[in-house]
Length: 332
Image (cartoon, rainbow, N blue to C red; front, top):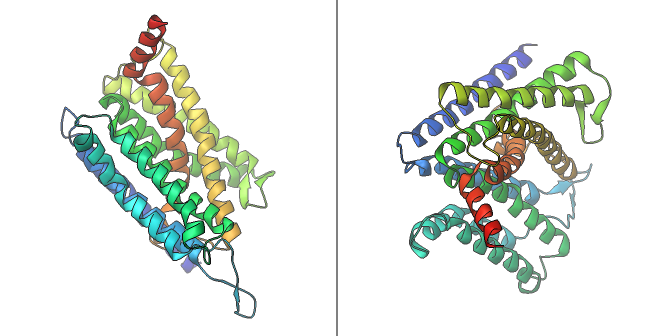
């Protein structure tokens, strides 16, 4: 009993430190009216990206042992050449973004070009390793290498773009939703599942998750999104300027859709990570966060939700994209 209490206290302390770090970086990014300090928040994303990639590569590189302690050959175990390519990719990811944004094309809003080019180059290099390092690289660990490239780096890139390319007010709202919806869904899924119990959601992947918990997480995730939007409108003067902005109900419908999709993606993100860990035979990705496991154990739902939320904001909330669409329609 004392061990459980100490473990719970450790989890709470680690969670509070994690929240404090995010809040501090979020406040620092808003110290300038013209948004020139958004790069401060990108530093936090960069740190999360590197640590999460390290966790993935270490997990896929672990030796599997049988009941007698003998090593079992694993075709998905990454070769050193693959790890070098992926580490180079993720370490250069943010620097390439800024070089593309401010140096290569001498203007803003071109950082994504550098990210696309570097991602294409990585994809080609991982395929070339099938020839260059054919003794240690096979189809199975090539697939694992692609997985370690996409998850989490590519998904983290959506947080980077939400922080950089959306208008300042929309960016603030999007980031708040990205980092709020996951803990809300996880917390209330746990509470509702513990109280109501019932049918298991995915017993072979995550035996503790229930259908009642998933529904509870979905409902409270939607409510959290609506509440956050209401706070932004009432106290921060947020004004929706996206598609169909002349209708007062439009942003509320979109926020509800973001709540629905985001809550579902959070739970899928958690299940995807559970599936990866089950296939690899590990409990946690690492022990970087005491009581929580690794960075990915904490951010698995967040990175999945961020991709969906960024897409919704870039399509429906960004007036620049709306003007581009309208101009294209008029040209036709």
